[in-house]
Length: 254
Picture 1 (cartoon, rainbow, N blue to C red):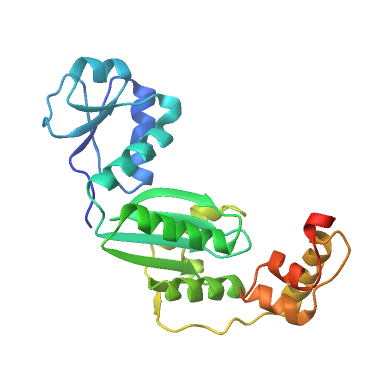
Picture 2 (picture 1 turned 45 degrees about the vertical axis):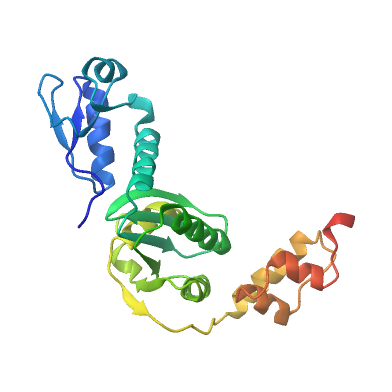
C-alpha cells in the first residue's frame, strides 16, 4: 500500500492532543510514530504538535489544537495531494436516497460525509478526480438499495471509472442506523465484484408510489407524476424538478 507521507510523527507533550492525533491517523489508515519533542527526527519529516512546540522546534511541524484535529489533518492531507497526485483514488458509496460518501487516496482516508442525493455523490466524485488527478479511479458501491445502486453503477461506468459492488453484510457490523458516511468508509476498504456493463434499473411499485407522493409534496398538491414519469425519475433519466416541469408544474408561479 502506498502512503503519501512517511515518516510521520506525533511530537508533543500535550497528552490530550497526542491521543486525538493518534486516533485520527489510525482512523485514516495512516502510519504514524509518537515521539517526545526532545527527540530529534529527520528534518524532512512532517510532525504534529502544539503551536508553541512547532514555533520552538521548526522543521516541517504542523501546529494543531486538540479541538480541531480532524479539520487540520484533512487540510494538511489535501495540500499534500496537490504536491504529489495519488496513484489510486478509491471512492466508497453507501447507496440510498442520501448516500454515504468516502474517499481514500493511496489507502489513506481523506474524508467522509453524507450526500443529499445520488447525483451529488457523482458530482463529488468528478470534482475530486479533477482536483487530485489520481493515476486510477476505483468506485466501490454497496450492494443494498438496488435502484440507487444501479443508478450509481451506470453513472460511474459512463464516466469511465472502474466499478465494484461490495457485499455490505461484510461492512455493516456494529454500524448504527443512518451512519452512512462510516458505512461508505468500510465499503471503500473492501474488495468487491467488478462490474463492466450498464445495469437495467429495476424499480419497485413501492418506490414509484413514494416518488408520486414526493411529487405531490414538491408541487404543493397541484399534481401527481404518472407512474411512467416516476419511473424515469427513479432510473435517473430526469430529475424530479424536470419531471414536474414537463408535467406542467411551474415552481416560480406557486
